[in-house]
Image (cartoon, rainbow, N blue to C red):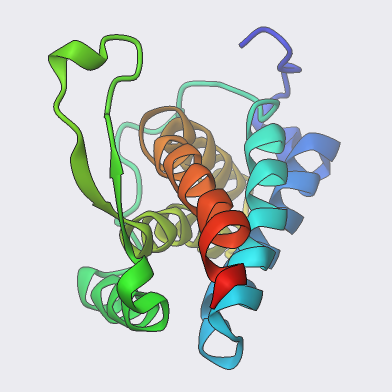
Length: 180
């Protein structure tokens, strides 16, 4: 993407695109953490509201190579992720599964597969939350780790989960759950 502004890693904590993204990441993580308190429809409508904004703001995050050879370990451990995934899956019930094709450009090379909305939402959460945890360590190196985590994983992981989830949630909210 060429609409990214180059920001020196040392100036990340003052960068408007980074601060806007951080605010949205915080809102998304708070939503996921509070999903048990919401009805299924309210939860999905709130996801439908936040996900496009996260995508748009991720597109303008600064891109750079990390200055350290090794990045910190993930802060969200697999057991924590698995508990969250299970809870979201339970909240979604029969609406957790949906069908998708992984590569829409060459669909003839890919049979449709069963996907999990809970997996999408929990994976997005883990990638965003790890960045928030790094950010809260309040050091220039950790700011860099946070932005790199968000940006790199957007391109290769959580951005794909977001686009898949957004389509599934759209159908649930507008075609299925309103009829219950």
